Image (tube, rainbow, N blue to C red):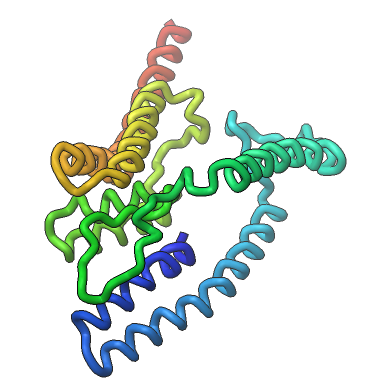
Length: 245
C-alpha cells in the first residue's frame, strides 16, 4: 500500500511542487519521492522474508483459533492444490477485466492531460484506493486530512496491540461480529463515496463512514475485547458456583 501511494501521489506532488513550491523545494520534494520509490521495494521484500520466518517458527493461524499442532497435513500436494484453485480464479477475473473491460475500474478523467495551471474539478483514484481517498477528503482541514490518512496506516499497524480479546476467532464473539459487519459496511461506503464528487450528500456519508472506521479501530476493538472477557469470566464463575452448590 505504501508503494502504491508513492506511485499514485507522486504526480500530484510534482504538480504541487511546480505550482506552490519554488526553487529548492521542487528538488527536495522530487528527491524524497524518488528515494521512496527506490527504498520501498527493498523494505517490502525484507518484511516478506521476516513474515515467512515468523510463519515458519510460530506456524499459521486458523479461523477457529485453536492449536492445530497435533493435526497437520503436508503442504504438497494438499495446500498447493488449494492455492492453485484460488490463483486460477484470480487470473480468470483479471483476464476478463483486461480483455473485455479494461476501463471498468478506472475513470475517463484519468485520461485528461495534466495542466499545471488548472486544478482538477474531480479527482478519482483507482478503485483500490478509493476508501482511503474518501477518508482524506472527509476532513475539511487539509492538515487534518493528512493526519487522518496517516492514522489509517497507524491503525492497521497497531491492530495486534489494539486487540485485547483473549479469543482469536470472531466465530465465538457475537457482539464483535455485529460491529465487524458494520465495519465492512463502512468500508464499502468509503469506497463508493470516494468515487463520487466532493459534494453533499457524499461528503456527509463519507464523514459518517470515516467516524465509524476510526471508532471501530480505536474504541470498539480494545474496549469490546475486555468487555467480552469480563462477561465470559462472570459466566464461568456463576457456573462454578452452581456446581459447588
